[in-house]
Length: 290
Ligand code: RIB
Image (cartoon, rainbow, N blue to C red):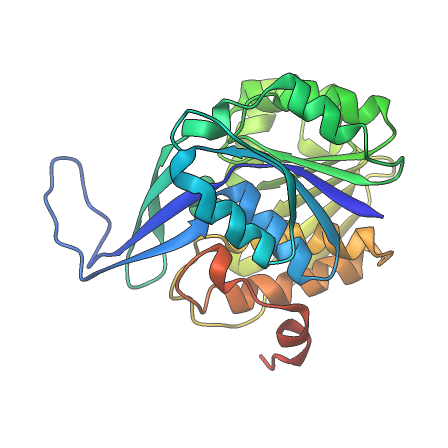
């Protein structure tokens, strides 16, 4: 099977900071690094590194052709990444020594996707393929609805969190991934816990406490522990987890096994500085000793 990702593509500018800047504060960074990023691109790279066939549906501006090339070099099919007149999305990311971050997002071309591009791309998908969407592009609800109609496994990674954006795709979802804070925000917005919203599979990531799967049909809960690592940069770890889980399921793994592999990949990821460019390959994930 294959994974189709309606996903953002960003240029990440990552600043190493002594602490995260407060309102009104001027603060010097000790270094600046540039990476390929965007929650979408990170998930595509993670799923490809985990061994799945991945088709990215997205957009870059004239300044972003390098990003498309880099995604291709990571083994992602970029035949459906179009070039628009809008500048490529970018993110200004501050990271403090403990690995926490603060991100300013400029959506740019990620919000300039064309419906025709989406429908053309998904016309090539086969029933049973996976479609993943995050909240950094245009056409999220259109993609989810089309994916459901085509018999794809429709997955939504609810980040950056926006309750309205989740509710717009909710009727079409098979799979929802969100973190603990987002799960509480969603429950507050719709008055039901994530396990009771009619989505077959829900994963709540719990940071250093691991991740929880809730079977939306039976209500059964399964926890997968996190691995003991010292985090230097948590940016992109959630995206890595999502890409690896989807790749595991796409390759026929049971949910618990897919989550265990994803948890190892995310653990390795937080020990590295950077985003898509440093997402670990499956062989590294399997060989890692924690
Ligand atoms: O989740 C990390 C990602 O968020 C970064 O790569 C940045 O581009 C933003 O989309």
